[in-house]
Image (tube, rainbow, N blue to C red; front, side, top):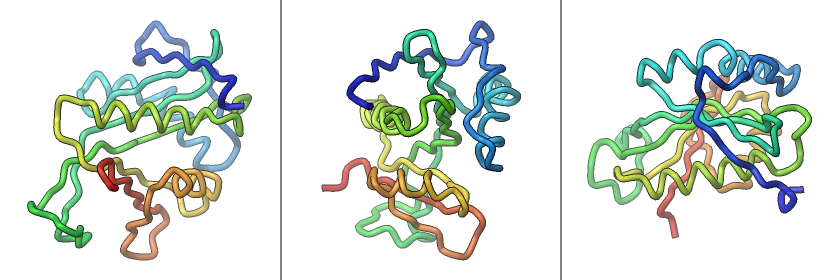
Length: 167
């Protein structure tokens, strides 16, 4: 399980072969894998996001794509907000390769992302993400990790937020 994992990561680059990455047959899984294979490198080269690929030994176990963002504190009625926007890091995509499902890879990637955001040289208050309404395993994982559902209407994606500095 998770304690047996010794994940190493590398920033996505042209030298990494991610063409065989698969994380499931559900629509959201196909979308996540398609992003890594077809769009992530281009988005990164344009400065929109950064993608990190995680390996267990030589096998690609998963990836995360992050981007700088903000939360409009007036829209979400953030308690104790001093400004109209609060700085955030958004998890644009997070995928775990099918052979590594239910082994703690996503939790390790979330832990790494949290540490990176909290230790960045820029102010970051929140981690945010959108998860498909029908992605019960994903929503359950994020809720167990401590993300809160801030979705303000009945949408096909849930807006979830993790306060890095909550007590």
